[in-house]
Image (tube, rainbow, N blue to C red; front, top):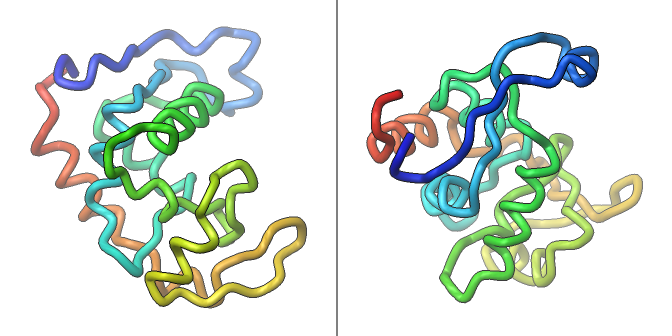
Length: 146
C-alpha cells in the first residue's frame, strides 16, 4: 500500500473485544480517505461504515482504527484541496457534527434533511448511498499490491 503510506498494525489484544476479532488494523491517512471521497458523485453519500468496509477489503485487514479514520476525515475536511468530505454521513444518515459546511453543501447538491436524534440527517439517505463496489474498485485501481 505504498501509494497512500497508510500503516497496518496488529490489533492490540486489549482492543480485540472492541473490534470483535484479532488480526491486522489499518491506520488510514488523509490521502487514502481522500481517494475514496473523490469517487462519491455529487448528490450521493457514503456512510462511515461503508468507507471502513471498503478500506478493510482494499487493505486486506480485519479492522480500521476509528480514531485514525476520524482524524483522516478531519484532515481531509481541513485541507485546501477540493475533497468532498461533506458527502460522508454516519451509518444512519446523520450528519457529522464537527464537519463544517456539511449541511449547506448537501442542501446545495439537492439532498433533503430531516431531524435526527442529535444531528440533522439526510432524508431517505439509503437511496443516496454510493455502491461499495464502485468505491472499492476505484481505490484498488490506485493501490500498490500488499
